[in-house]
Length: 325
Ligand code: PBG
Ligand code: ZN
Image (cartoon, rainbow, N blue to C red; front, side, top):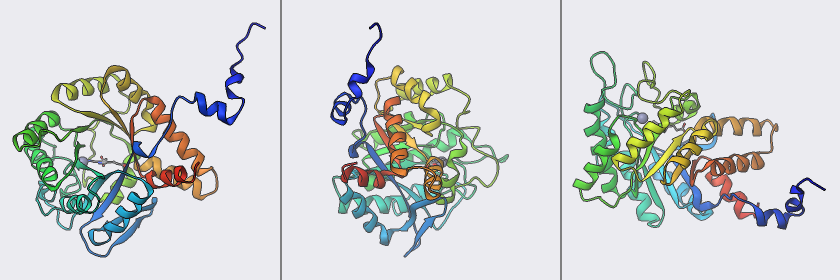
């Protein structure tokens, strides 16, 4: 016979397990949590079943649930009581994220806290930076506010700073600010490859961060561009990024692979809110096998080159793994 017998290695479950190239484990997962400043709230996000806006006084239950399932990394997003033009709530020591971070580090010191460093949840206009008189997001004036945000997050105990604002020079500015404050050992996980995507819709409902006017296309990337991602990657490496996030994930697996092939940095796939919503909606209708679809999606991100995955499915996945699935 002159053909290859590929089926030899697919003959049994044990054989397939032995030759499997990619795996997903609990240590790959980062779980995002929405923390709301008002008390006694546990609001499920309609488009994100199983995901809540949670008050600080109820946060310990969610942290315990995550911890007990085996999650060892969380990322907080804040919904503040007050918003203003420059996003003050993002960088005050009594900010909602700073409080959530302190609580988490006190209850579970070995669980990593990732801080999303951005202003959009705290600005009254909903943009990720400050605006000029014409409503344009101004780059260089925004940088010091991001630095203040990152430093206050580090002071609260954040283990990793993850800036998601997409201003130019943010990695360099934040690195310098962290170093000057003595936090030279805190890594920066850069969201430098972040597309202006419709897949963020459910997140903006959850985080109450939809821009009041305009869109984010002057700072987030055009979904049509691949080479541009390599330029973002190059500058972030030069500016001192320790890890690189690609966001969204599933429609951008080619970009994850490009980053893998063009850098030696650990890569993080952000499996965003719209990707979660679509899967949950189809599953709720009984149209798909949720567990199998979720795991196939996770495997595809890892196979594309991701080392870690930020995902709202983190608890579900730990449940599958703990059951031996
Ligand atoms: C903004 C930010 C966004 C997400 C996290 N931080 C996107 C945006 O509103 O532009 C999206 C996450 C998701 O959709 O799950 N700094
Ligand atoms: Zn933002």
